[in-house]
Image 1 (cartoon, rainbow over the protein chains, first blue to last red):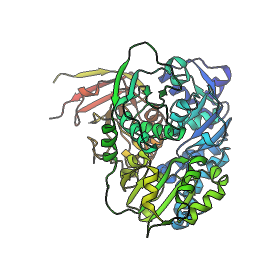
Image 2 (image 1 turned 30 degrees about the vertical axis):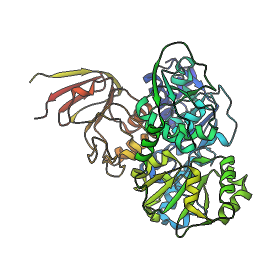
Image 3 (image 1 turned 90 degrees about the vertical axis):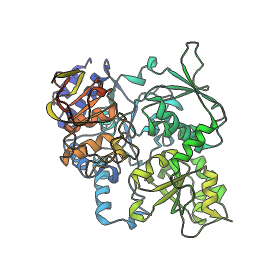
Image 4 (image 1 turned 180 degrees about the vertical axis):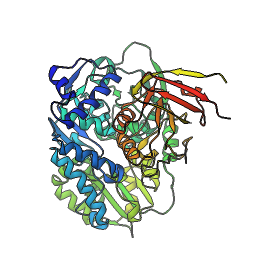
Length: 392
Length: 136
């Protein structure tokens, strides 16, 4: 890989240990993927913020970086943490809250925005063709596929390295020639809701490997539907983008073709529901975090209703969106649900709160919850989730 | 026995010898491996219930969340990490994890040639794996 003089100096340690470590990560990745050089990025988004998934060892790593003078060079946002400090924080032991805060403190010292969301694209504009270095696999797929920006699927540490250097290696989907589909997916039966889009994502992720699919049959899908699709794709596979009829005109080059039928979606949904009929502790929507439009839709659907029995209902979004939907939030809370911010349910402490069974409209959550939360799952559409959670 | 040498590409430098733990399936370190004890916890995974500690961990490639890199770092800090990682095709989550956790890593290896229990020598400087003792 070609390095500028300045980059070489950083690699040799002339700008301190933090920059040197970050440059090493970028160069290792660049060499591995045969990048020709480093390119400047518009923003970085870092995953690995929740104390529950990070554990203690990475706190030391972050602290050493911050102590050594590591500071962000571009707009840099953070993925969610492990609880909503205003609502669920008090239910957790003090040492958990302290360790979580220790992580946030290190990021703060390095100049990160305390965005704490998996949907950074709702917080600030991202233009077509911008180069980014984002972690959080669902946001990566969304950025490449819906926003048509360019980002590889970074790891928490590689996005961190890119944030602290302001550059990323030029390889993979940063190069136009690598953004072409190698498999055509024909969705035979129309998808009925966002849950089915997420389920299609899980189904395809398992068979695609890292291939980019051109997916036919999504003309009526909303950006929120495509968000679910991308989250599912990234959870079960390595794919970092998909193309649709909106973003790609079908080429004449023959490529492999697969068809997906309603029965495939139904079967995958059944597999992802480990507890289709049993008792429920939590109904959860907002993975990935709800858009403003979704919060408004939920408010309309639960308006005037009341939550059933001892059930918990969580609506997760970013603090940014919540602050812009306070009227809707009030209606949702009046019905007995919680609108939670800064957190991600699958990297939160649901077990410690006695939650053993989760109903959700997110295929990604249903995919992860049995292992990450040791919870049974029931996967259904947003409307069905809310019908189950509320009466009236 | 005849020695089998498999050639690949060294990614993170280092040399070691250890017992292979081989999977035909991708591994998602987030959610798939417990970062406190190094046990593989994905249900339906062919290595379900096995520990990665001190193993030469062979699998096709990583999958799942990018936070997986930190799980490798976390395991290394607790001395529960694999001794080396052998992939069919490296992916960034595993590569960065191996870089910051300082785990020798090679890719481009036909891992079907290796069986769990084989004793293998890994040379990630020169990019090869030698099976020194087949599983009985």
